[in-house]
Length: 92
Image 1: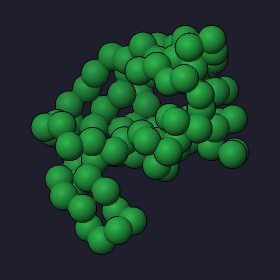
Image 2 (image 1 turned 90 degrees about the vertical axis):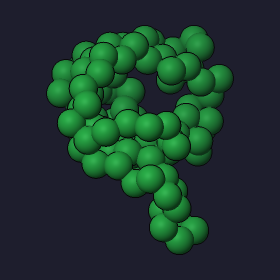
Image 3 (image 1 turned 45 degrees about the horizontal axis):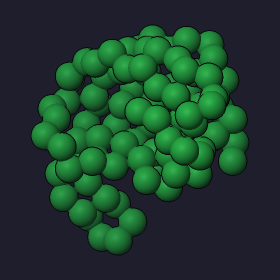
Image 4 (image 1 turned 180 degrees about the vertical axis):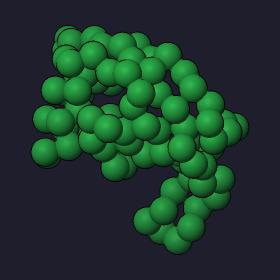
């Protein structure tokens, strides 16, 4: 993942965000329990960080206007730089 600015990440991907995890808007087929390694940079010039996430649950279709399809991810491993960046974004 890489975004030109933090606001693009927040508006397009991370609807609910904390260092412990996030909800990711997506219509991609993914299943609860799936684990994955990620390498992320929330901006092109910002710090990059790595971690491991696990899909907790999936919403396959829109549920009203405010509940888009996507999945909840729990951070299993997250570098400190990533946790700090996520906390700063969550505070916004």
